[in-house]
Image (cartoon, rainbow, N blue to C red):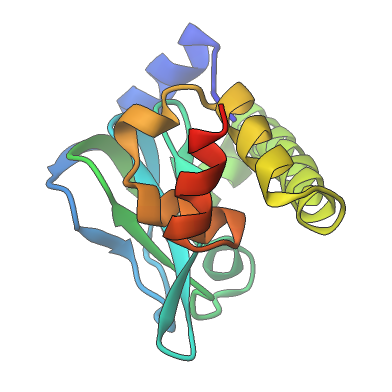
Amino acid sequence: MLIKSSETIENIKRIFTKEEFPAKTLLVKENEISQNIYYVESGAARVWLNHDGKEITIQFLFEGGFIASIESIISNEKSWYTIETIEPVTVYSISTNSFKQKMEQFPHVREFYYQYIQQSLLAYQKRMVSQIKNTPEERYKELLKEFPEIIKRVPQHYIASYLGITSVSLSRIRNRK
C-alpha cells in the first residue's frame, strides 16, 4: 500500500523526523508498547511474530508504506508482532502521542489516517482469503504480481514464511516457472 500524493509525502516530511536504520533493526518489538509511527522513504522491513519459537512473517513493508503497531496506536496495547528492517531504511518518524495530537489539530491528517486504515483492512482481508482459498503456488504468483521486486529484495526464507510454506517448497514452486 503506497502513499502516492506528493503533497501528503511533503506534509509527512515536515512534521515527522528523518531517521536512518541499518538492516536487522527492530523498530517495533512484540509485547512492547510501540512509541512511534514510521513512514518508509527507502528500504524494506518485515512484520513477524513468534509462534512457539518460530518466526512467522505476516507482512512486508516497502517505500511509501507505514510502520506502526496499530494496537499501540488505537488502545495503547503491547504490539502483537515485531517489525524488523531487512534492508537499511530511511524513515520519517513521529511519536504516537504527537501523531494523535496532529489528528486532533488537522482534519486532513485524521482523514488520511482513516483512509490508510481502511486500505490496510482491505489488504489484510485479501491476504486472509488468499491464505484460505489459494494454493501456495497461487499465493506466490499473487505476491510476485503485487510486489515484483520482492525476489530481489527479500530473503527466500522470509518469503516462504510469509506464504506459510518451507524454503524447500518455495524452491520447488520457483523451479516450476
